[in-house]
Structure formats: structure tokens, C-alpha cells
Length: 378
Ligand code: MUC
Ligand code: MG
View (tube, helix red, strand yellow):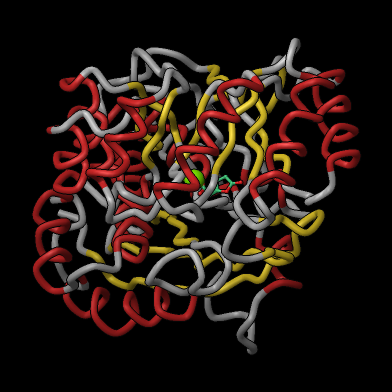
């Protein structure tokens, strides 16, 4: 029985390749909390807890993720049986309310450790992969139509992405719609175009917005209104032909059940972090499948470790109607994995090897470690 000896955390501040403009913030840096669990038999597991834009996207920050793990999760889990992941999830949920990203980061490291000890992939622990290549979207969010079109054309040419998500909601509705129309006109025949409003619209705005987006030929609109207004999301889902996706409204199985019960969305953007870990994300997936709701693998724009974890889980899902957006590492200027994830032919590929199939390169993260002295984590 390998005991959990130590849970270590560190924050890395990773610059993005360009400003990433969402309705609530513009990102120029992504701060990831890296977790390493050391077990008594010498094995290790790694995880990542990452949010978006400090505290502007959700209720956790990089600093809170780290401090919740250090102060409230580590003391509860240390000395426990590292193989008993269900018991450890239960212990985390009983001792820490909310804070799904912190719990997900630790749970990821537990799955990685167990899978490595067994010499299998994390996907194998979830029943095994049904696919090794997953369609992958890219987000066009420079804020400028011409820059976005150039970016899209380049990515199409390199066969990296043929699904594009546009971030809207910061500008006047007419300007946003004109921006979307310009991009659809330029690349809409070769690519699927979707938009993410990140909750920025009222119901009235959303009605106009969805009508306009539908006429332009956009395939899908993500979280057009506030996450609490599930009843209003349903009005939009029922009122328009364009697909409506829930993202921020989904915070684990209970909220997923509420959205599914009324079929208030056509599709779920399932994020392992927002769901509170891989296990709860698998439950959200099961709820969508049972309710006839389409699936999409969402991201909190994680670096390589969190992205690999999501890939392991989503490779086990037979039907991913809307594909994935597991492109996080590409938004970052610098790679942190020893062996980067592979992207080709419009797909991201399941990494080989035990556990997550991902290793953190100590030299690559060194310049970005927030805390000095730097030697304690690796
Ligand atoms: C979100 O709300 O979907 C995912 C991709 C992206 O560009 O932003 C994130 C967050
Ligand atoms: Mg979203």
C-alpha cells in the first residue's frame, strides 16, 4: 500500500503568445499551479491546477489553488493509501468545499501516480481509449479581424486546426457581429466557426445576438448569458436553430443534472477542472450522454499537464460531437513538458506512456517559477 508521503505545489507564470481577449479579461500570462505527489514506494504523480485571468473567470486564483492544496488538502491526504482514489476524492470533498480546480489538480496527480505504478495510461483506468486522435479547435481572440483571419489561414494551411472559436461580448453587439461575419466570410467554408460570449449578454441581447449569429452561419454559441440563468439558457436553446453550449454553468454533476433535466443546452463544454476532477467530469459526461446532449472537451487553457489529463479522459468517450479545444500549450510561448503533446491533421494525439504520458521538464519551467528559492518542487 503506497502511502502519500508529500504533496508539493509550485506556481509557474507562463507568458502567452499574444493577448488573449475574453469578455471578462485580456490574458498575457497564464499561471499554472503544478502539483507533484510523492508516494512511499518512490513513485510520483503530477497534476496541474489552472484558471483564467486571475479571479476574473471564476472564484479560484492561482494563489488560492496553491494555498488550498498546501493548507487544507495536503494535511488530510498525507499518510493515506495512495491507491484509494475514491476514498481520497471523498476526503477532499468533505474537507474542502468548492475549489474544484485545486481538487482536480491533486486528483490528477493521484491518477497519474496510480497509473504509473500499474504501468498503464490514465485512460486505461477509465476503461481504455476509444480513439487516439481528437479533433481540436483553436480560439481566435486577438481582438482584430484581420489578425484573426491571418491566424486562421495559417493554421488551416498547416492542418493544425479547422475549428475556430471566436471570443465575443466585449464590444457593441453590431461590432461583434460584423467581426464574426468577416471571419466567417474569409474562412467559414473550410472551417467550423463557433463563438464564446463568456456570459456577457443579457437575455434580450442574446436573442438579437443568436439571431445574427445564426444568419451569419455560425455553428455554435457558448455560454451567451450568465451561468445562473439556466432557465434563460433554455429559452435560447429552444428558440433558435444555432447550437447552444453550456460552459460556466457546468460545475460538476449536480449543476450538469440541472441543465440536463430541462435540456437547457444542446451541448456541454466539459472541463476536468471546472467539474472538480476527472472522476466528476466523467459523471458530467455520463449525464450528457443520458440526456442526449452533445459533448465538447473544454479547457481552462491549461499547460501540458492539465491538457494531457483531459486528453486521457476524453480519449475514452466514444462520441464527441463538437470535438475538443485542448490547445492550451499552443497559447503559451514556452513548452513545459519534456515531450510536447502532438498536434497534426487537425487533431491532438493521445500521448503514449504510463500515467498522463506527460513529464515536466525542470529546466524548461525554471525561468517561470514564481517562488524562489526554486529547488524545492523539482
Ligand atoms: C472558455 O470559456 O471556454 C477556453 C478556450 C478559450 O479560448 O478560453 C477558454 C475558456
Ligand atoms: Mg467557454
